[in-house]
View: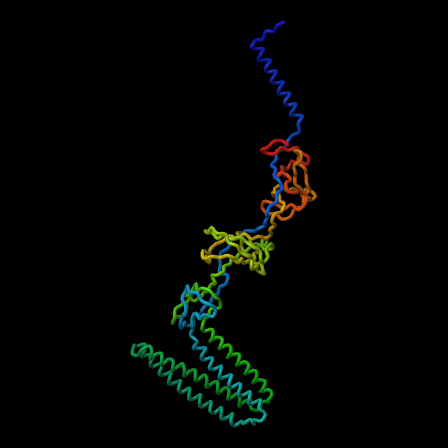
Length: 434
C-alpha cells in the first residue's frame, strides 16, 4: 500500500518530529544534576606583606631654630643664609653691654663675700669694729663722690642732647656724653653696693659668729651662682650653631634690632631627611620601631626606603572632618635621600607591618566561615565543590596565608556564591565540566 505525502502532511510530521526531539533532550537534561559555574585557582606560594599607607611632608632629620629678642641689638653677623656650617660656628653677636655691667657687679659681690667669710672663719683675727665703721664712712664718701660725678655727667649729657637734637654736635660726640652718663650711673650703683655691704658688716658685728659664717657661706654661694649665670648669658651673646647643617633662614642685619619678620635663625641638617606623620589609633597600635617602608615622593620617579624611628608616647585628640579622633605622631627616617629631595615636599609612605616570603596563600574572597566560626574554603574534586577547613595566618588586602588544610597546587573556588554547598556539582568558568 502506498502513502501519498502531500505538502501539508510533510509539515505536520516535521512538527511532530521536532516536538519529539525537544522532549527527548529535555528528558535527558532533566536527568542531569544542575551545575554551578565558578572561578577556580590553584593554591600557590606567594610573598605576602601587610602594610599601611600614610602621607606627610619631608623635613630635615635634625634642625635648630633660634628666636632673637627684639629688645637686644645685633652687633655683628658672621655667616650668610645658604652657608654650610659646623657645630660650634659663631653665627652672630648680640649687644651684651648690660650683661657686662652685671658681670662686674657679680664679681665684686663674690669677692666681698669671700673676704668676709675668710674673716669670720679666721679665729685669730680680732674683729675691729672701728675698721668696719671706717669702711662705712669711706663707702659713704665714695658714694657721695660718685653721685656728684654722675650729676655732672648727667647734666653734660642733657646739655649736649639738646645740642645734638639741634644739629650742633655729631653723633659720636653725643654717644660719648651718653656713655659717660651711663658709666657714672653704674659707678653710683657699685658704690651703693659697697656701702650696703659695709653697713651690713658693721650691723652684723655683734651677731653670733657661727651664724654669720653660715649666712656668709650661703651669700657666697648665691653670688657665685649669679656670676655663673651672667657668664652664661655673656657666652650666649655670641649665638653659635648646635648642629652641623645649612643656614636656611637668616634675615637679621648687623647693627639692627630684630623684628617680627627677621627674628628667627634656622639651621637644617640636609644630609638626612624624615617624614613626620599623624596616624590614627587604629594604625598606631600596629606600628613598632624599626619597621621598614617604601616612600614615593610626589613628582619623582625614584622609590625610596625608610625606617620607623619615632613613635609618640601620647595620642592627642585631633579634628578629622566632623569627627574627633586620637592621633599619634610617628617619624620615618629616609634611608637613601638624594639631592632631588626638598624640605616641604609631600611624600607617600607604605609601612610594612608584617611580611612573609614564599608562603601558601589564597585570595581573600575565597575564605568563608561556619556559623560556629570555623574557617573553610571550597576545593574542587571530581567536578564537585568540597568544603575544606583551613587555618589562616597573615592577611593582606587581597590574599590570606593558609597555614593548614591545603597544599601547593590544590584547586579552590576563588569567589564561591552564597548558595554553594558541600558536594555541589560545578562548572569551571571558561572551561568544561569536570
